[in-house]
Length: 558
Image 1 (cartoon, one colour):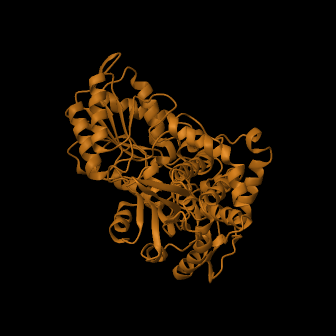
Image 2 (image 1 turned 120 degrees about the horizontal axis):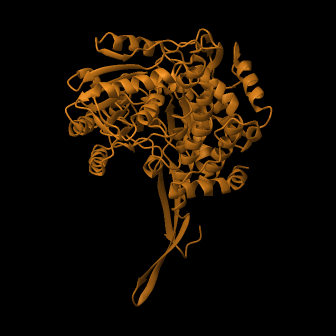
Image 3 (image 1 turned 135 degrees about the vertical axis):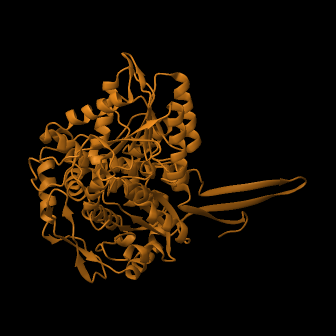
């Protein structure tokens, strides 16, 4: 059955391999929630499935479950009251180890086939997952559908395709014949076996529970490892649905469903630490704070640790033909999901003497005013704005906005709550734009949320130096720049390459610094402190397995 799954989806896999080689646009998972694509009843069925989980036990059978846990609350103002099976760390490890015995023997086609089938089924359930993502992360529905569904599935498939590409380069058998002059040649048979590392642990985040988890989850599964999925306690449901679907596919393929396990826990539990430090956990994929990520990198010595952590994303404005187009693009990036994205911009560097435009020189204050006006216009109609900003996932993020206001900086645009027409209790906020200069130490730390500093620098050269130093010291996942000068563009690109951060130049249309496309854009570089890996490349998958060989003389019969 597992081999049938591989054959059934082989065309999709081959097309994914082509896309990662050419870096052209392609996706098998349409991002628009159209009934023509997903079916006339898909939206209603997804909503009904989400509602069925509320105030009930989640339908997931796990051996050794001793209690039911769950304290998820929608950022849109209501409790989910979903109860999940709770299993202790050692039981999870024991079950995962036992499942590894048979899963290891299945081989790459079976591993990849199960992953491909699971991704196909996840795509069919995209509306259900979108509702779960919306009401755990706070993303607006369209973003929750796209980022939580098809885009996350794209990143999962991307990891699977890289895994298959790397593993398929290794032949299963080889006949090795070495000439010996006048003597008979040495004639040997050699067998090469892909061997998984062992148990993988995926530690999910609350803001992008599927998008940030699927790459590591599917990279480990596709290379023969078992996986324990540990969601953030505030965003369990999207990954619980994912685990349930994966376990169903595994069972149908004849495997122990404990190849994939859910490690749900309450907020005050130390389950994550128990699992991450266990000697049998050999791979850890983590998204979250730098403090925890650094701890795992330094202390989980028994495991390969892949991290995406905090950083300070920056924008350099040197010059622009049309400042209004620049401001519109940036305003959307500031507001999108209320800045709760690892790619969201924070520091905007503008020379204190202003910038050149097609209409002449604009002063620093005029640039600030243009950015502020664009934000105000974008957020002027709350019923539309909330579909961009979504809701604030964590109360700490809301508090951080107040902390930024208390810095005493000049306010360009104040952050305000938005009235949500469907969810009156939603926790919302528009972007806060503050004016400062390069000497302010506060700009050299991450302010997660809709908090933006427009920073006066001595010159564009100063902006470039400041940005490069910040990437090297604090990390960044994105860098953006606006310039009409080719030499300046080259200088910024060289700085980005040397500091190890992806660069976007002169974005004014429907592409934003926050966004990356699977099969084409590498998310993160692994070359600065914000992340130690890129999603996805060969390095992300190739070390999740090893090759063990057996050799014998050809005349022997084994």
